[in-house]
Amino acid sequence: MTKNIRKSLMFAIALTILITCLGTWQTFAAEMDMSARMADGADLLTDEEEASLTSQISQAYATYGIDAAIVTVSSLDGAGVQQYADNYRDYYLSDNSVLLLISMEERDWNITSFDRAIPYFNDSRRSGMANEIVPYLSNGDYYGAFSLFVSLVEDAMLTPDRDPDSEGYANEDFYDPEMENNEGYTSDDFYIPREDNTVRSVAIVWIVSLVVSLSAAFVMVRQLNQARPRDTAHNFVMPGGFILTHKRDIFSHSHTTHVPIPQDDGHNSGHNSGHNSGGSTTHHTGGGHTSSGTSGKF
Image (cartoon, rainbow, N blue to C red):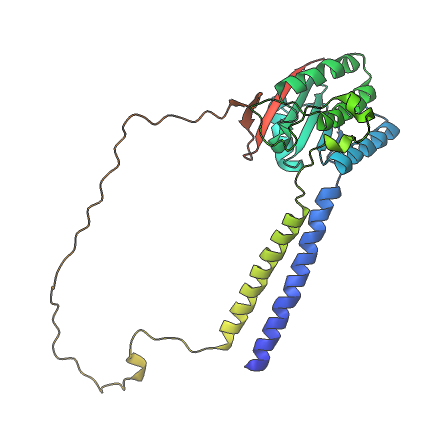
């Protein structure tokens, strides 16, 4: 049996390594996948322009940790522009993302920030970005509009809105562009990096793979021991060796438990998913993520 147990443990270790490698590969693949960040479904860009924007988005992610995305579609497939943006976040983007969505069907635009990116892109900031981007869209200069969007996203990471109700700011100093020219100041003094989820993701993969592997090994070890507890002694009694002549059920006592029924005092109220937080009107996506969007026509 010792030899079999050793084989089971070796199997568990091998399974742990295999699952961890697969999970870690998927984690880094998700971190590096830029195809969902520059998705020109409406075919508004040339291949060269799309490659250039993909590089800009990748650079913004590497420098500031912001997950910027540009998505163009020919149709919203019956959904509202905000609903489409929310669904896109649920499937493709991270919890520190901002999305520019363009639909050519009704010439809709939408800028939505999600989760931890909302303090950087509140209602006022998104409206200001739209005021600069929409003229390019109206003139058909889509590459110019999208490139400007990425630049404005980078600027927002350097100059976050200082709303006193917003949370998550590590640096309480206001940003002054002229200060960068002074000795001792760089853009890093005003950049507030996002939390890196890579280590956490890898740790989760390790834990899950270990639990799965140990569970598999436990099942295999259990199968090695065929002995099972018995609730009765029938297997140890010879046929005809025991004859029951009398039986009687005796009632001894009873116990009653009372549980009060909660009363509705009329103070309960429904939950409204839309609310104002830190200068942003927010709601929740179908996947439960916090979303704050601004939309219009061009």
